Amino acid sequence: MNNTDKGDNHISTSRDRPLLLTALSVFSLLFATYKLVSVFLIFLNKDTISKLDLTVSLYYPLISGLIWSAIGYSFGYSVFARKSWASITGMVLGFSYTGFYWFDRLWISGKEQPILFELILTLVFLSLLTTILNLNSTRVYFGKNGVKIP
Image (cartoon, rainbow, N blue to C red; front, side):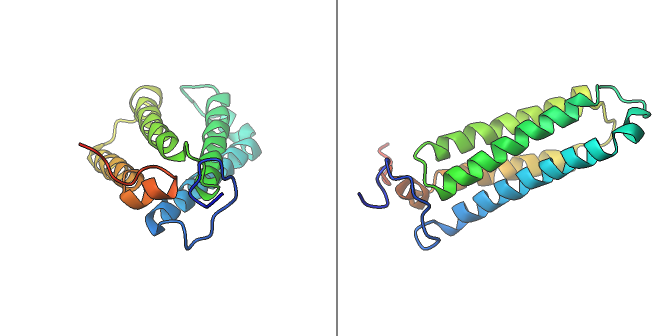
């Protein structure tokens, strides 16, 4: 079995993996670590945080942080392990997190701050994600046909 077979579950070398895909995977792992650290900080400071006038239960950021942390680590690993489902999963997760973020930002948190900068970052993030996961080198890396037929 060669490196591009779909059934191959070993972690590929960095020479096989496209640089942009490596960067996306590292970003996913950093995001997951950020979410996990925020969960620990909330847990350590739960007495102080519970005294604040929050619009949601303290369990909401704890549980959502744990869920997104686990998802981020899973996606990061799936790219390094060359799982054939990683590219479509990355697209679904990227758009799902974007929807979750904006739902949380607009309806749960109720922040009344300007959102233009965050909106621009969201569009840039989704554009980069879509581009990286649709590159020919990414398709070949995951063992898919590198040529798209119109």
